[in-house]
Length: 310
Image 1 (cartoon, helix red, strand yellow):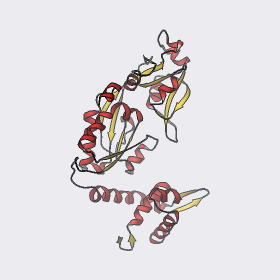
Image 2 (spheres, one colour; image 1 turned 180 degrees about the horizontal axis):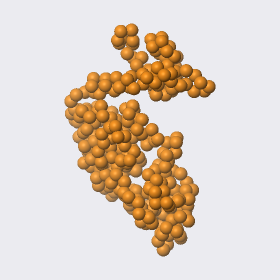
Image 3 (cartoon, one colour; image 1 turned 30 degrees about the vertical axis):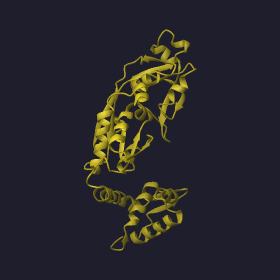
Image 4 (cartoon, one colour; image 1 turned 120 degrees about the vertical axis):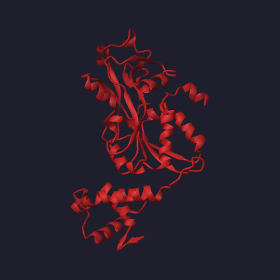
């Protein structure tokens, strides 16, 4: 399709090139060959009479003209997606939409099973693609690379709507055979023992309890960094290490694993998990329905017994 002399398909290519600043990666993102993406870049350069992306050593950087085009091109594509490509009505029983959701393994395992069962019962053809949290959360919402983001409220973008889904607080877990925990856990033991902690993405962003403990001027001696919350218990069992984790995950796993649970020896506030979507999707009835299912069913933590009975 053309608008004047511009092939509108080239806007999709330009958006990917601006985002990735790499011809090969942009081609993979759009399922194109590298030669096809190079051809698209050539046509874009000709249309705009500008290089758009230029090589500087091993990297490509945007020209001022490309920087200027980034926001309006993204806005146009989002408008098309939300107003034209998205069906105006929604019937859970017949919808076959796919939703991309960024969430932690903790939230998926402990809080979402009841919501996922409700969605499956009412909307059997809907597909949910869960992705891990990383350091690009706000950018991924802004660019609509994900439909929904479920994470702590302090990580939410102020530019887009969100709703609270549930709260949780923290406890410390350790192997039930850890001799250092035989008489309980105080701050001195907490700081002496090695810890397992979680970090996300290529930037190795620590999880929120790291910030909360630092705010209380508590320092941990981290011996293992885990890429997910649910791997943490296996890294403390059989060792003298401990970990600060969400209470409801600890209680769920302690039903079947040799774990002891202790209060955190300093006072740290609970966390609020919220769900966010792009402002252009505010009228998307299907997306709002998914949000409602999460809000309705994720308030009570899951137990292994409930999972087995479902």
